[in-house]
Image 1 (cartoon, rainbow, N blue to C red):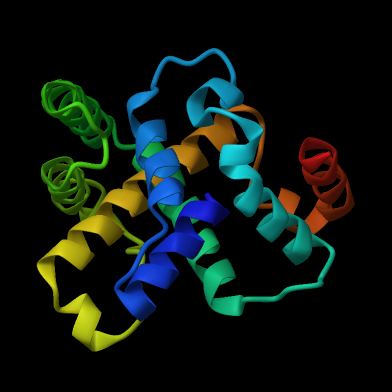
Image 2 (tube, helix red, strand yellow):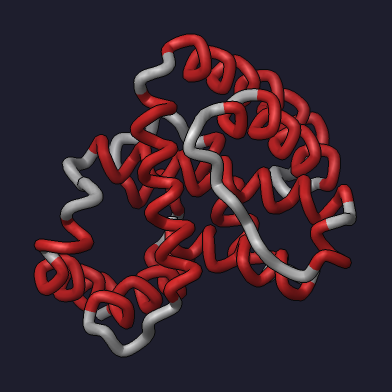
Length: 190
């Protein structure tokens, strides 16, 4: 989730994204029935930037307050989303439909797939409160392609928040389990 949201911030500020990070995020959206979190994200190396980011935050080496506000917003939005069966169903059906398109195009990061995922987020999750407010360079935030990519990655961030809850995580872990989480991130990084 942190890795995806850091990418959202980067895109909003610069209009540019890291293709491998975007691919990891968007691939995770389509891996709904995975048995483990690793199956959702691929290899540890695919999420290493996010693990380093979380580790530095938890050990107070790096404090990006705007990123933490986004994380908090997404965690709050996930709680609302998880309690809205109609929205859950609409997102599930939308992802299934978009998965067919992605298969036909041979990519989860094709511009048409990014636009479709961004549209799905806009039509469903973004209607819930609290809304995730992304700030950045107005020049980039006025470009439809940039907005679609941000929304698609926000969908991936919400997916990560859902997974976080499914494995027993909570918002309070960021306050009360910092040391254990930092150690776990460090262990995964090797």
